Image (cartoon, rainbow, N blue to C red):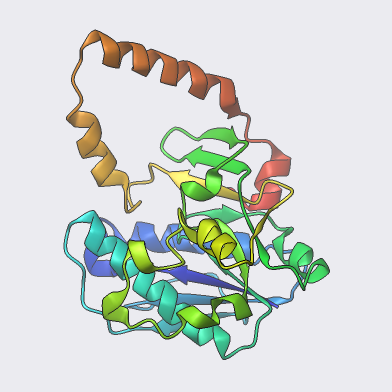
Length: 260
């Protein structure tokens, strides 16, 4: 069985709690759109989300964590603590594998069936997939390294995570935590249990929906850039590259990832 763990930020940190719940509901519909029913979903949250969608495989784990500050590092720690608490809860259900999913992303409906067919494997990192810019409905295909951009990026065999279940919450930080997505594959490789790359596009990384944790920080960074010739050239090349990787949002992609 595959358990999906979804860490959810507090309503007190949301620009719009209604919007957060809407995005989560789409994510849940995407996760529950699997071709195999051999999965469960755990939402780790401060407050139970307001949802119109329900499924018996979805449960909420309410946690009493202190609210993070406004800085990115504090918000990141809050998310990682929720991931750890979700992992501890999932271990009680004896799954074969875990996958963490950000509360606004979408996933392929083939994931659970693929895990069922490869039950003894260490797991996979999702290198290939899509990036979807919500505000202008623009889809881009990423052929590599997507797992370095988002938490919705690794499927890991549960027993490989047992050494990490005892990390105290106060010690969780990106430089010592296996579930910091940029380091996950490297840490497991160093432990002698490397992940393979998922052989098909596995997820859609959603950006610019107004509730992404990194969104406001990215806006600040952009505003601080100068307008010299070097930056103008870099901006032009970036726009050209983005145009080359843009893909149409086809009915097939919408159906597989429940991207509606």
